[in-house]
Amino acid sequence: MSENNETIVTGADEASSEDIFQQRVRKVEELKAEGINPFGGKFDNIRPINELRASHQPDSTEIQPATLAGRLTGVRNMGGSIFADLKDSSGKMQLFINKKAIGEEKFKLFRRLDIGDIIGVTGELFITKMGELTVKVAEFELLSKSLRPLPEKFHGLTNIEQRYRQRYLDLITNDESKQVLLQRSLITREIRKFMESKGFIEVETPMIQPIPGGAAAEPFKTYYGALSSEMFMRIAPELYLKKLLVGGFEKIYEMNRNFRNEGMDRKHNPEFTSMEIYQAYGDCRTMMELIEELVTTVATNVFGTLKFEHASGTIDLTRPWKRVEYRDLIKEYAGADWFELTFAEKVAKAQSMGLTVNESMPEFEVTNEIYDKLIEGKLIQPTFVTRLPKEMVPLAKGCTDDPALVDVYELVVNGQELCPGYSELNDPIVQRQRFMEQFEREKKEGDEVADKIDEDFLTALEFGMPPAGGLGIGIDRLAMLLTGAESIRDVILFPQMKLKK
Image (cartoon, rainbow, N blue to C red; front, side, top):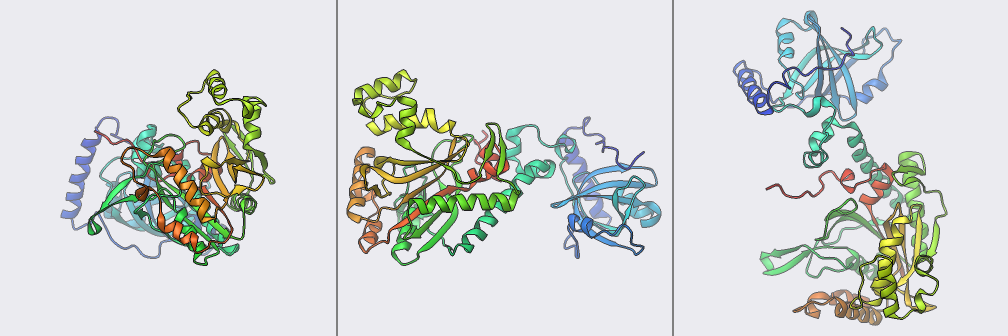
C-alpha cells in the first residue's frame, strides 16, 4: 500500500454525526482516565510547514530536525507503521509513524487519534521511496481532540450556505476558499503600504453616530443608555473625515466598517469594509490618478498581473482607464435627444425600455434608472463615469461650466461600482442648501431637520475647509475583483446570513 493512497474514513458512512460525537466524547473520558490531557497546552518551537519544506536540504547527510503542529487530515494504517497528513495554515506535510521508533504504547495512542485532531510532533525530515518529503515522528502530543467529524471526507463543503454559516469548516476543508480570504488580507496590507508611501495617515472616526451622514442609506439604529438617546451605526465616515480636513489633517484615510440596513445579494452585505481617502488641495482628477495607481500597484504586488478572469470575461486593469461622461452614456442608450424630452416623454420612453418608473419620481431618478438598470452592468473594463447630476451627490463640488452637474466620478469595473470620487464641496452656504434640498426630497412624516442634518459638520465648514479631493472604495468589492470571486460572501470571513428558525 502506497503512502500516497487517498485516506479512507471508516465508519463515517455507517454512523451518524451524533453517534461519532458520542464515541469521541467517550474517548476523551478514557484518555483523561489514563492521565492523558486531550486538550493540551503550549507546544514550543514549531515551524510553519512551508518553512520546513523550504529549509530541507535533500543532499545533506546531517539530521534535519522538524517540529510542527496542525490538524490531522489523513491517516493510512500499514500495520507496523502509519502514514498521516498534517495540515497547518501554510500547507500540508506527510508524517511517518513507526512502532519501533516511538514505542508500542505511543504507537497504540496514535492509532486512537481521529481525523480532525490537532497534534504537535517532533522528528526529522526524510524523503520516502515515493519521493515525498516526510517527517519521521519521534514524539507527538495531542493538543486538541476533535469531537465532530469533518465534512465530505475532507473534500470541502458542497452546500454553499453551510460554507458561509460554518466558515471554520470551509477553511479546514477548502484550500481555494482559504486562499481567497488570505489574499484579501494581503490586499489590505498592500493598500496600507501604498497609502503610507504617498504620505497619508490612517485615522479612526466614530462608528456610533448621533446623525447618520455621508451617504444616502438606511441606517441601523441603537440606543445609548448612558446618554438616554437614540444612536446610529455609521453608513459612512465622510463628514467626520472632512472635519479633520478643517482641523489641518491634509492627507488622511480610514479603512473600516460601514453598516447599511438594506438588502443582501451577490454584491451587498449589510456590514462591509470601505476605505475613504481625502487629500487637501486635490480634486476629482487627483483622486482618479490615485485610485488608478493604488489598484494597479496592489494588483501587481499581490498577484503579479493586471489581468483577472471573471464570468464576464478577462478584466484588464492596464492604465489609463476609460473616462466617459454620464450624459453621453445616457444618450447612447436612450437616444441623443433624451435631455431635450419633456419629463412626461422621458417617463414614457423609460417605461417602453422596460423600466419601472412613474411621474411621481424626481426627474433625475428616472434618468438614473436607465444608467442603473441598463448601463452600469455592461461596463466590464475599468471606466470612470464622470459629471453626474448634482442631486445624486450632494457633498460634491459643482462643475464650473454646468451648475446642474457635479465634479465627480464613479469607477465601474465588472458591472458594479467600485469607487466614487469627488471634488469635495467646501462652500458651507451651498452645502446647507444641498442638504435642505435632499431633506425635502426624502423626508418622511415626523422627520425633523435637526435629526437629519449634521449642524456640527456645517459649522466646521464655516471655519473653512481647504479644497480637496476625496474617494471611497469598497474593500470587499476590490477583493472580489482581484481574487476572481463572484459573490461578496466569498471574500468576507463571516458574511451576514438569514437567521435560522
